[in-house]
Image (cartoon, rainbow, N blue to C red):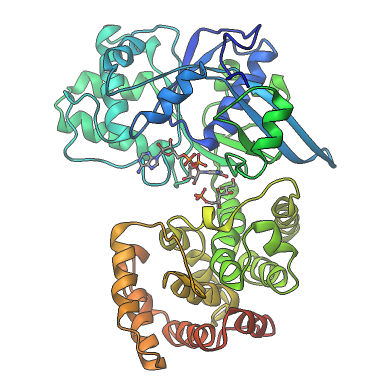
Length: 489
Ligand SMILES: NC(=O)c1ccc[n+]([C@@H]2O[C@H](COP(=O)([O-])OP(=O)(O)OC[C@H]3O[C@@H](n4cnc5c(N)ncnc54)[C@H](O)[C@@H]3O)[C@@H](O)[C@H]2O)c1
Ligand SMILES: O=P(O)(O)OC[C@@H](O)[C@@H](O)[C@H](O)[C@H](O)CO
């Protein structure tokens, strides 16, 4: 079988390099790079992407072996009909290995046609790293790397304001653009880059906050053999995604002239305030994902679709969304219900296997940003605890015991979180008192929750009771019981 690259596939277009992208991951390839490919194929953007890997370099080298080409499978409902299609994405021109080719990175900073920066470095990526220096090749952090790039550009073009960039981070954190800019200015101060550089960052560059939405399970492990036969080439970067997408960019309307998604029939939105879109998406879609994962996995299920279609777990998820998350949001009820129903349909997508284990990564911090605000707001509004949200917190603590029956669970989270759970579950003697101690220690881990959750009235007791039920009766019985309850015990 021939390998995918620009020699084996004829007629691949090349475009001037207009975009620097931090991240070679599945999501960006199925989202931003796809949108740029759609615009290029409609002769509307005429630009290609240079990818740098935020950490390491192996993937970018492997992507270069395919000359940046890869296949995107889009599978799901499109205009009301189930559609499964694939397309060869040609928008990535090359990747740069920052460890061996840092000079090429600096050369790119001198390219006058370069205009955009996109990134997706996970929720952990937009962070200041005190040890980063301007002289490092490369800096450890993504914002450190970008600051060095921008400083080189500022010098190369002699402070020219017309050579600034439009910077659109896609990380799922609040005010991602503002946060990134803040850290760049922090580096500018720490590295003594001068007031003129700070002025140039402020005047010449446009930092946008953004919200992204598309379910991208990534490399289709279970169907790659049939796909390879269908494609007729070997592609190590195939990415599978749903059809649905939503890209909301908080930034000036003039960006549309340079990034004309609307002319290509893409409904990417440019808005003044993305807060309502973000809250709705993070609380309903991501909140449901994070809350359903430990419950469904310990129930014995593997994928999101199995969970939503399941008679018990499916009802659990619906009640969680409609009875406990939606009542804490301020958008019109009909709009929220329609969004939630669409989300449930997306979860049911029969074409893609979205594994619960892949969603489970960093679940403890995800619960803080995606579910805890709903739990606290519910308590604030109704003066009682929401049963399913509390139950899912108990299920999360059970999940972090690291066992599903005799099977080990491959937990993936920050070292301190894994240590906390290991130490706590290490003390478990089978009694409810010992479970209470575990719960109190977890709820008291302020570093994660941003507060001591033991101060939420009744929460420690309710979590302990649910955890006791999960431990003694098993998830199947415990989940069935919680369905009948309106509030937490
Ligand atoms: N896959 C989806 O459905 C989807 C949808 C919307 C948003 N997202 C977000 O995108 C992020 C990446 O998802 P993906 O599916 O592309 O995963 P992936 O594993 O394919 O890619 C992860 C990317 O993040 C980088 N990275 C990982 N840890 C990092 C760190 N500590 N600092 C800097 N960079 C780091 C990796 O180098 C890689 O580029 C996730 O955090 C997720 O929140 C994913
Ligand atoms: O990608 P994560 O690990 O941050 O979260 C898992 C899912 O909730 C997430 O990927 C959603 O599928 C996505 O946010 C949909 O746009």
